[in-house]
Image (cartoon, rainbow, N blue to C red):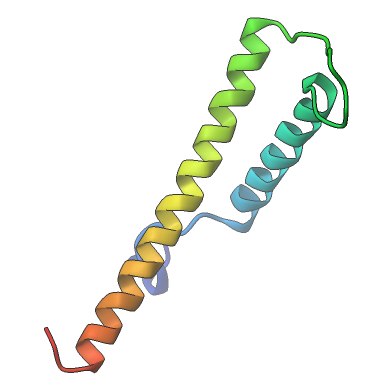
Length: 88
């Protein structure tokens, strides 16, 4: 249950959750380096389908989260600027 201080702000992920999200980014990069064709490689080993799907879905989840947070903050700034300028 959120504290009284947090109730008005909506859900705020814990530091541990955000840290684990950063670990997902690191893991995706490691898989890309291991299985990708970057760094001048023309051929690389192929991961099995289940692991490939896991990495792709993890990357989509992180990217979606970051985009939604950015959009929310941008919307808040735009709303604040509109209110500050007396339009709204």
